[in-house]
Amino acid sequence: MTVDGTALVTGASAGIGRALAAEFAANGHDVVLVARRETELLALANRLEDDHGIRAYAIDADLASVDAAAKLYEATAERDVQVDVLVNNVGIGTQGAFVENDLGRELDQLQLNVVTPTQLTHRYGREMAARGRGGVLNVASTAAWLPGPFMSVYYASKAYLKSFSEGIAAELREEDVDVTALCPGPVDTEFQARAGNEDTPLGSGEMQDARAVARAGYEGLQAGETVVVTGLRYRLLTRLSNVLPNRLTRRLAARLNTPD
Ligand SMILES: NC(=O)c1ccc[n+]([C@@H]2O[C@H](COP(=O)([O-])OP(=O)(O)OC[C@H]3O[C@@H](n4cnc5c(N)ncnc54)[C@H](OP(=O)(O)O)[C@@H]3O)[C@@H](O)[C@H]2O)c1
Image (cartoon, rainbow, N blue to C red; front, top):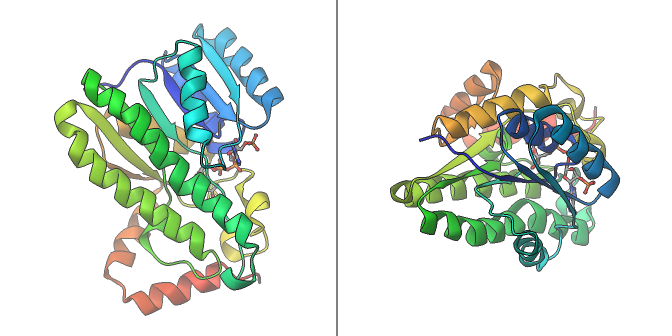
């Protein structure tokens, strides 16, 4: 069944989130754009309304706090917006040895990558289930397939998001709510600069294009696919990491996440 209606996209001011918002708008969905940078959100909202004749709402919010999901839910209710598709795109990475990294930043990462998406899915997903229609698109990563020394919290957070998506996809199938985990390899966005991994093999290697990733995610959700891995190379690598011994994949990831 196709998923229609208003799509709320977190982390919509840049990168994959901005591309996802554009993809939904180009396909006729109204969109709710959420991130901290209000100027970027308003500019994007105006452009999407002009280009596609849809309605775009901009909500500036810091999603790294435990009450962020509740506040965002209230903000959509105040605007009388029904969220038909939830796109949990927001996420950050942190490069470095866990015990040497700033713990506050690691916990922000867990809130953004794990807790806020879980809270938003509980609120909006429950309404979708009651209506008997809707969709949830969670932006995970190919990092979900292996442990990632020197980005340990990031890889673990993406493993959670992929597993969570697969679990609730099976639970919500009866209610006609589709859930998709979008799993790209490295994508050319602001992510690397924020994560501080620009000088690692992973952060400086070949990158996927955010628009192509967004299109694959949109099409995967509409096709009812539960897990979408973007790019042939990463489809092969994820299959390979299922069969390689864990000590080998750990060693490989450590090398990819260590500055040259
Ligand atoms: N790029 C990659 O290589 C890659 C690969 C696989 C998966 N992913 C995943 O794709 C998703 C999007 O990443 P991206 O590459 O597009 O990163 P990005 O270019 O850095 O964009 C991140 C977005 O999240 C928003 N954001 C960050 N912190 C926030 C906060 N505290 N509160 C609200 N919004 C916040 C940013 O906007 P503001 O700064 O305006 O708040 C921005 O819109 C993430 O979940 C990431 O893990 C990325």
